[in-house]
Length: 104
Image (cartoon, rainbow, N blue to C red; front, side, top):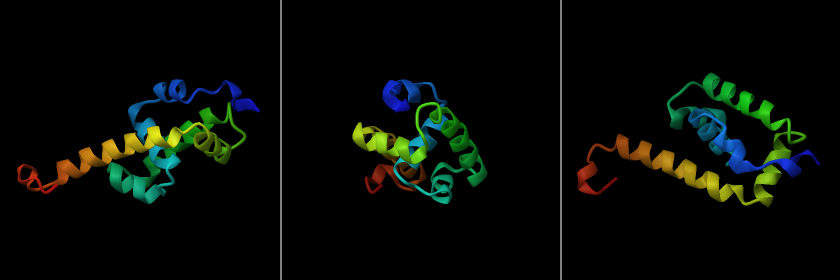
């Protein structure tokens, strides 16, 4: 198995923030159009980021599903969930019309 030498933390630290955030959304199963909507970019941009990341992952995994299986085994979901929630909270808070009212 190629992924014996793979370390998620090292891999993700080598990505740009845009690619890292896109990968986190993808690992959790978000669709392209949903990621594009939440991140405020085109589906083409999301697709391009994922394509780049997937080519790097191909050095360690048979395919993307193999990588996602690794993520389940290694409890990566907890880490990526925190990234996505942080991005969404920042985004949702910045869209709030009444941040001082405590309703957002």
